[in-house]
Amino acid sequence: MAPADPPAETQTPAAITLTALRAALPLFIPAIPFGLVLGVAITDSAMPTAVAWSTNLAIFAGAAQLATVSLAATATWLTLVATAAVINLRHVMYSAALSPRFNDQPRWFRWVGPFFLIDQLFALTSVRTTLSAPVWRRFYLSAGLFYFVSWTTVVTIGLVVGSSIPTEWRLDVAPAIMFAGLVVLGLTNRPGIVAAVVGAGVCLLALEVPNNGGILVGAISGVIAGYLADVAESRRTMQHDAGHR
Amino acid sequence: MSTLAAISAVLSVGLITYASRAGLIVFLADRPLPVNITRALRYVGPAVLSALTVNLIAGGEGVDGVEWVEVAAIGVAIAVAAVAHNLIAALIAGMVTLWLLLWLL
Image 1 (cartoon, each protein chain N blue to C red):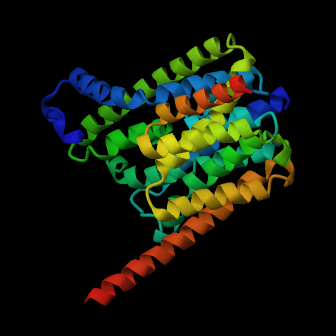
Image 2: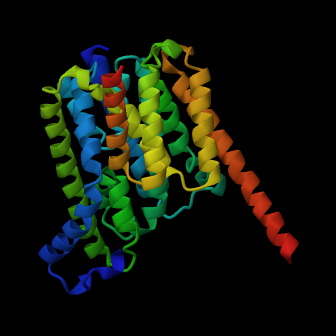
């Protein structure tokens, strides 16, 4: 989607910001129901509402926020923190992929920029490889701030609306549905399916593990299974290619 | 969970989130991750999110906490997500399934 932008180098700072906002908006729309579900989950949370809401400012990562506020009822402190941490491990990949773009940036931006690095911002900025360092920085910060402000707004709307929705609507099930949908949308290859099935299956078998430890047991088993399936698959592909030579 | 425990949990998750986003940018500029690590990281998402889904359905009550209407709703959501590649459609389909089943029974 990047190449359709007007030539950024000739634009005024305000025009670059406008370009960034135009590019950012369509990617935000699918996040709106997620933000609303999170807002409702905050009203349901075993955490005090203000603390659960503060995840917007302190964490700013939808899946980890949803896990944090929904696990507070049943999990121990350590399980909660460890689960949210594991959910966010994927950001390490974003960090690795974008780090070359941060090398020629000022130090303050290298510290501030990563806070905003959500999936949408990564998708927007990682493809814009031709922008100069200052233009890329303005683009990144404009889109990042836009996501930060709109996300917090949508979650707050969900919180306000959610507290008036009767419990018979069973919106408490929405987070689980959301996570299931995220799994499916994130599956790009066969090892990914293996990781998801093993993660869910082992967690099911490990439900009696105290303190919700089954999540981590399932997650670790899933990662190992996905990794092994990936290795096996690339070996097969290599043998297949060799056979054709 | 006490208020203090909740605050410290939120701050810890926040710090870990920031560290995983900033670590390689601030400290390891331009040093690529080992191939094996990126290979394993790719499967963190599906593994932990599916485990979390199962855990949330059980609601901390072990296998007894699993309601079959929830399982049905999630099954429909998974099918819709796989076919439509759309999270909103999956969420709506799942919730409508849940409401229909609860209303019929």
